[in-house]
Image 1 (cartoon, rainbow, N blue to C red):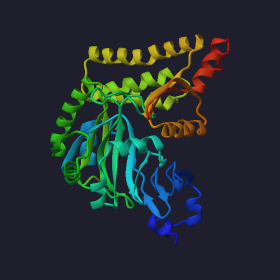
Image 2: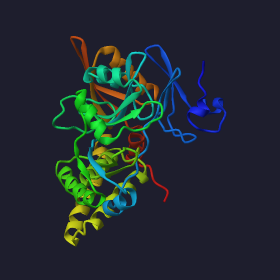
Image 3: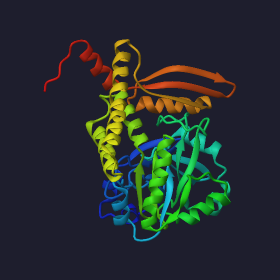
Image 4: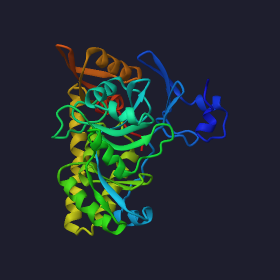
Length: 370
């Protein structure tokens, strides 16, 4: 019997109107639906597998000025944890199978295989079948983001939240950390819990350390897990801009503007001298100009430009992943494809078609109307 979706999601709309916003996909012969964009207050990434609901992970606001944002957001203890640069994955057990849902609610065959190999989560789900593990999949062998961690050879899954699968209610921070220890689940680094006042200096200290190591930033959470803020390092802003200007016509101006403004607010909050601001500006300029020049030269030479990834797994899983990307309209350039034993390793580039085509057009004499 079909569930009362309107009541479940607490929305006053016809169930058929609600469900028409969900995309339909198949995984291992199982039909499921997922919501690629937020609708009617329902989180992006919410998935329906028959009558089983997997709620999407809520969006998280970003702080531009730590002290005032912490003061305005938190009225009790604040937990500080590392924010990793990978991709958001929710893992749920449905009908005995572990399924890995990406941020948009897609059950990724590659991610699911990796999670099955990485996680020994049977005991956890035996005790908590109604929960889902929310984590970051990071490392050099992932098909969605391009950021390496020296401590990870292939990929790793690090839990940053445990939530009720259907309601999305988070487990408190301390209990979640205890669960990770109890069941042997890797967790993001937890730096401690502080008063809001003390959290400002603690977060700044961690940001300085993470920035020096080229890592992404921190997440600040209320101890019940209901409220959270993210704050990122200058190093990751530059890395983002370098990536964007490797593909200058595939990333919008808003992408660039937001990261430049993060740098500006960070410089003001830190009370940086004119010399320090100048040094920050020079680093930012290099992050923007150098990769753009390299990309224009690559297009001029006829080389492929785009996001390059390496993935490894059983041949069928790799086939499914590459087929999914092509079905999404992506053009792939396979640079290396090797099968050794039962493992297939593929290095491929997702061609940045807009950047390639527009750059070629301008190189051949095209003009811009301004």
